[in-house]
Length: 557
Image (cartoon, rainbow, N blue to C red; front, side):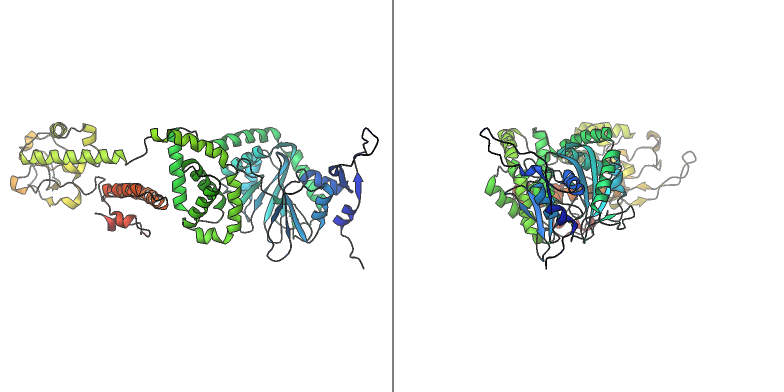
């Protein structure tokens, strides 16, 4: 006894010939174009009109244990064949996008942070004129597909950039396992990602209401919702969003091939590779960054490029946890990214053509300049102390320091240099409090004075000194003066919480550079990072270790 046919199979069993037979010049009939043959039934034809415009490179997966999605690239599906596969309860089928499309969707994974809160995604769609959507549970796993339709076809890539821009404006994270868009932001000369067609029998798919509760699986109801979505769409607002999205994407994706921009891009890519994988859904983007780096800056191509990327991925932090279990997906992503390598390879040739004329970023010149200035000021203070020179005012002392050190007044007055010479800014580590003599009637209650006040302001009568904020108004005797000021270990005023915060941020940047240098085998760059850590006053063996507790107090030189 034959099994009864479901509604899909009944519709697929009857076809309607929409194109008349044509005859050749000799009178024999030409073969019909199979694209002209549609399944009978208005619902089937409307379904294919909406989702069946691009039938090349379709995807499928059988409902068997261990089955994975596969792509059929040998031939396109005819409309009747596509509807038959949609009707098959033992097979899942999906399609890709062509150059234009009149619909799109946002895929929210079952474990996504947005699964229970779709407001940011819906707000983003509304910001570009898409005010009505159709919510579909894509399968029994619980993932969501947010479908929307447009009254006219637009560029698929323009739609991808516009939707991505709108979602970025709502701080929605576009990543596998969280939120994905179809059509997607694909690389040059590659295919759009395929998506599962909605409401296939046996898939567990169903329509959802605004409260994410099931309301059936009727295809006619879905098509009605999409028609309403297309009618309500504000095309003027959408076109404006697509234009802004493309501008945003171009600024984000492409770099002007100038020396400074390329050097910045190189460092950004090296930092990203050094950080490695830190969460799920980062594989596609990081593989693309590896391809960009190897193609442009290492001039690798074809098999050499593939081998370098795979070996680099294996050496990156987080590979074993986030990537290794999905090696098949890695190969597919790498294949897609490598399709654009010819264009990037041309950019790489331009890079290498003037790379010798680009002055690479070396040590931090500002840090070196600050260190030299601090050393010169400290030497000048020691010279003044050895000569027992005295000055009636701070201004006179600054003038003498300028003469001896060669530094400007603004450099001498910098916060990092004040502890070297100014009596009000001696650091607690190098000072002891001395009780002054009883106050005079005119000056009021005196404050404690620092013992290591430079000799240049000592041994002068109080009447010769201009009163200064926080100064006792009395001079110390010669035997109350300690040794000359020592040069600090680090010129960044260790002990100051604000300065330590800046040091910690700089240390984290240096750690990223050091990890990148190790990954790429750049010994000279690693040595330079160690030197910069020493200039900051910290032990490179501690702060550049693989495991560091983040505490600066324990790693000072």
